[in-house]
Image (tube, rainbow, N blue to C red):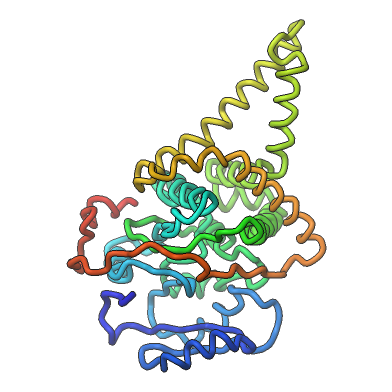
Length: 373
């Protein structure tokens, strides 16, 4: 997809491993020319995306940096919109995160569930957190940075397999802000159960790494973030990690107690209190799961995939399997990066022929909607 940005101000880097012959052959076949440049990450460990980014940063010439995965299809005006916003926003805003949208959601129930999840994450959770000034766990792509801030915080952690989550938290601890803005980048979701489990295993493992790194000195975490934001971060870790690890086990126990136990017929004050607490937690958990999905579905017009919601319990089981697998990998091979294979499904057709106003999105006015996004 061709970006709507002055060519003389573009500096595009393709970063790849030294032994990635397939990618090298594909790039050679298209003969990249200025402003495109191929950067080969030298042999070394760990073989992770953040290490490759750190290799490329000293060669980057711009004051703004955007990170995209190779399979991404960003909207053409995204770079211009991000640059325009950076020029208007205070220096404390160090990163702008675009929304990721799944464009192969109609392939099967797994890609549909992925589309629901991304709609809830990027256009409900992240947008709400940004509006409240809370730290964000960044997406690994379509994030735009001020180069000087990246230099100040030391770029990416090469050993973290979800470098985006770690970087978002480090930006917050450094006193910088992350905001969302109304631009979309289209991605392909994994379409097989095995691919989903492997991808989510890496994500959970990276969040575990991030939790260990940032919470090893809890007092300093509260000093850096303040009580309100530190508690929000701990709540995100609790929900994002302990939910998948323990959720299915607790749901099974709740179901057992409802059918065979005293959950619905408590005897004595203590049993009444515990049953009330169990039922409240179950109801609150269901609302916190379904409400963001419903809002995301409405905002992205995903109602056509609603039949896939019957597979939500299977999706939750997949997350649990991936979380326990991540815990095992954290012990056995903490820095191993399981790559997600792409290009295996038919993707939706993205309308790139719309007329482009460099300073204004067709869908939403730029500054009215995004100045406090």
